[in-house]
Amino acid sequence: MISTASTLRLLPCAEEHIPRIRAILEHYVLNTVITFSLVPPTEEDVFQNWKAVLDQRLPFIVAVGDEDQVLGFTYATGFRSARKGYRHTVELSLFCHPDHTAKGIGRRLLTTLIDVLRSPEKFPEYVDKPRSDDDKVRMVLACMAVDESGWENGLGLRDFYVSHGFEEVGHLKRVGHKFDTWIDTRYLQLCLW
Image (cartoon, rainbow, N blue to C red; front, side, top):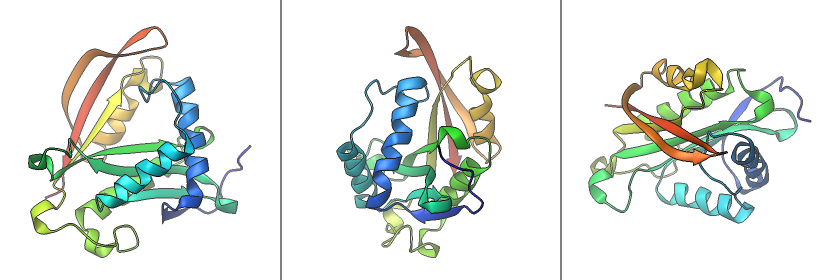
């Protein structure tokens, strides 16, 4: 059982955080439709994803509480990064430990991620070599599953993103299938400049 953190620190993700990130992801894969993954990632999977984020010169941020417990994390990855015309667009991922939702951790993580993406030169601890002007991040995408049994009938997360300046730009109906249920997704975007 993870205790409630009396202090919350946001840090660049390090290899030592990988096992706890994997455990958080395992919970969401096995118990929710927040992710359409059907099999929990291995530590190697999480490690490779972390390295890929850093290789793209993008931030991977963890929220750490007492005793260095990982209470949440967020990162950005290139959207359709194989196609260079999308180089100014990233997609975010954000997860909080299931025992630490609705405590402001997600809000702090998202705010910090946006700040780093907007002005990476001000945050060398998260991005040691900012992208050039030719590939600086301009647009941040969030894709969310609509769990109708969840928070605000599945739209609480959408409202969370909207409160941070995102605009809903798409609704795909019944595109995911998990736990014998067809699931909609909503797409939101935030322009950084």
